[in-house]
Image (tube, rainbow, N blue to C red; front, top):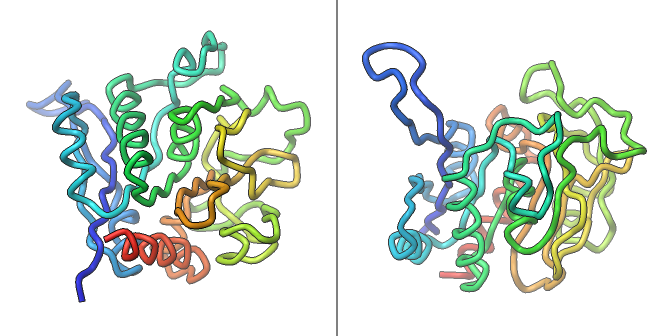
Length: 245
């Protein structure tokens, strides 16, 4: 049986030492790769390219798109000026992610967005972000944990009847590594999970026949260490990609 090919969007970093200092690196963290493998998919890294025709060919060759974590999304992309707590941005990746999401969405390719992934997915399709959680009046939970990456540190409540509810149930404990969050949800999407302080933790497409889900936590870090609940997110994503072949 053929396995679906999952395009994992790469991130950007720069060499800080050695003979290649200053050179750009495009990479993905291993837990993304292993989680896709465990879920039955074939992971391939999508390097960031700035040619739209090449980008479209990349998207056409895969059965689903995984948008990974990374730097902050440029607030100018959702018509806001940067506040003091705005973090580092990567304009090339912003452009690439947004174009990949828009094209995959137009082709109805399944999309899973993780951490930055939920944020840039929301922005790409017309939504906005809180540049920092301190802008949310109700926020009081620590959303940037100091514990081991695979350890859950707070809970989220999931809306009954949602795709994510069918995967995880009503309440789930998650890890947390973010200071930005979804603000206004893109048209056609709905909020399906929130932390107890009201921060949006997951969104998904209202249409039930198409898998487009974003989560604010990092399920790959937990699935990589044996968390079967979190692995189920990837299994359902890969299953949706089977249908898309």
